[in-house]
Image 1 (cartoon, rainbow, N blue to C red):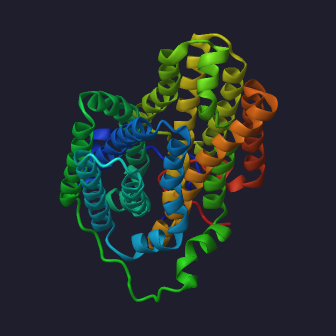
Image 2: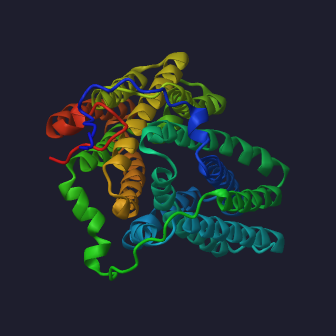
Length: 424
């Protein structure tokens, strides 16, 4: 009998709707989602606490900027190792070890706080350890989900995983502020406990198969993910689309300028502005987990990127608080649609043996786009003003959507999210 292979560019066959409940029935996926939520929630709590602690100790905003640099650099510098580790060893074990290491580093911060020492280098040392652990954690957790779900459930799984991440990233800073209000020790102790709980949840995830360790570790194997991206145009297009769209349209760094000088809503309004995008992303992630995209995924993705750019322009020009908050909400929702489709396509079209290395590159791209996007926005705002900086960025994002749609036609024509695309 000849096996029929589905072509994702064909219209989708009528198939049972994959519900979130059905996805969560897959062994280990629920605990995996729980561990992912606890990881991002705890990280957000800790970064709020550490930022306040540093500023209380020094009063120097430059030292706060170094926190972001310390968070990003390990992922970049360790790129040759993090992806290889994810492809050679059990991803569940990597996640567990990283969560335990983060918990120990947080306990170190707690002991530092209790000691009453005023030197700040122990804080940065702990942040480096945390960043190294997260550098190994990120590609492992990105690559593990496809090992826990059948292909037909992956799109809904990606949406539920994104919803957990968004929920943690929205509620974590709020909880961090509340816990810090009680005491810095409570915030740090709670973070350590949540990270250990996440590691314990990973014990409920199937161990999976041991990765092939027969290949020697050399530059060929280390750079195999980069070599794959050069050949797999669909995956390269999906990853680079995010890089350039966020690089050009990132407006988050300028929200304080809008809150104080343009919309004039003050600190409370700044909090609403910062939360609007995340709220939109969370609502869209929950919607997609309930009603997944079943056809014309490529067109929807490029439409979402163009929508993100268009509402960036709306936000840039707005001087009305409700319109600005609404624009940011739509931007977050549109970004989540793009993330949902791109993440699913990247996972489906990357061989499992290379998934860790490709996801490591992807995570560096995401980090670079956020950091460089903020730098781009700040630099342009210094030269031209905040409004032109945001508006020009939004126009650039719309142009990127059009150009990538033309340069990567197979990505644009992708219809279904339940099968890999045939490589051109």
